[in-house]
Image (tube, rainbow, N blue to C red; front, side):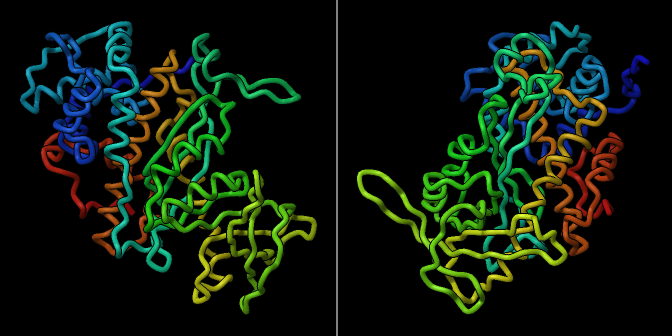
Length: 401
């Protein structure tokens, strides 16, 4: 049965929210103008859809994915007029909207995300820190994109012995702050580009000395490990048990000092600390956990590190928030060209970040762990905020629990 798209009520002014509320708190108009000038995407003449309006429109799509494109544009433009911007009443066609987005391109949203996305946990945020280090996780996920020729050629299909995926797929690699679920950096590419190469692009620029990075066993490689260590960050990564890690010194807590080998003109080694363990009740045939770290402080026990590692699963919840709760029934990114697909996904990440920032503020007023708040409920609160309330930044006292 055909699905009918929802229409936005006449008096719901989502752009009030975007421009003066949640999204504007992380993407203020002056910053957008600065990035537009930096990329040379400033509107060169009085267009029906000026570039700043299109930027806000792309972010609005993440909140109103079940509404028709023209409806989202209508309320964006109404909100901009409410803010005093000289914006005519717009009833643009889908074609005109697509042309405006094409003129904007993906670079503006990508650079805007680079300027905006950053860790947000405060020193008092529960569950965000480990011995003074900010707990981070890295992982990848794939997104189905519209089955158009350009998307298929650029992104490709996932192929197995059983056949190929129904849609072309984009691969996203995200660096997430575990305590707040904020995506603080990301990169993307075709589905055939695996997580390791994407991580090699992202981690050297995104990691900071105050971070402790958790990663699953698909990421370990000597070159990537070295480049991540060079940032000054601490690492706690799972590796496959088949990797040869000699026991050089056994510590009292059961962990041991080891080394990885770098082969070249001459063999070099990198120092490692190894933590091996199994979970209670784990099937005997299951692979035991083997973690490596560059934390050699004996005051930090192996049991603490083993317990910490399982916070890596927080990043799976983040992808679920983006792919299920924000996208809703619209499970496929709807843009029809690779450039607009990337633009759409950057807008989605910015919207998610804005919601997570609001949730951190709300949790802070009640001294709660942000993980205890419902992302789904927070999104609903944001959507139904009345226009008169949107004249002010989001209240830190609003109950999102």
